[in-house]
Image (tube, rainbow, N blue to C red; front, side, top):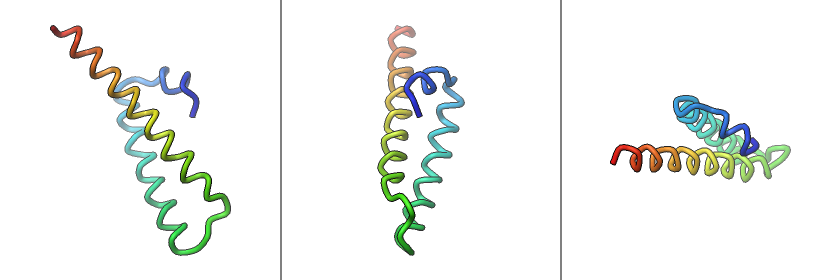
Length: 69
């Protein structure tokens, strides 16, 4: 997921996407533990995407908190 795609999402969509991607990561990890998956690098990519989403969410929360003051 590109950063421009992340910036285009609303805060509610960010939360939903984080939840969805976390579930996908869990499923992928279980599948990899049971048997080797075709592309194990997908786990790393998914983890980094979740981190990018969380970073943007944190930025938005900090911006909202600074505006409230």
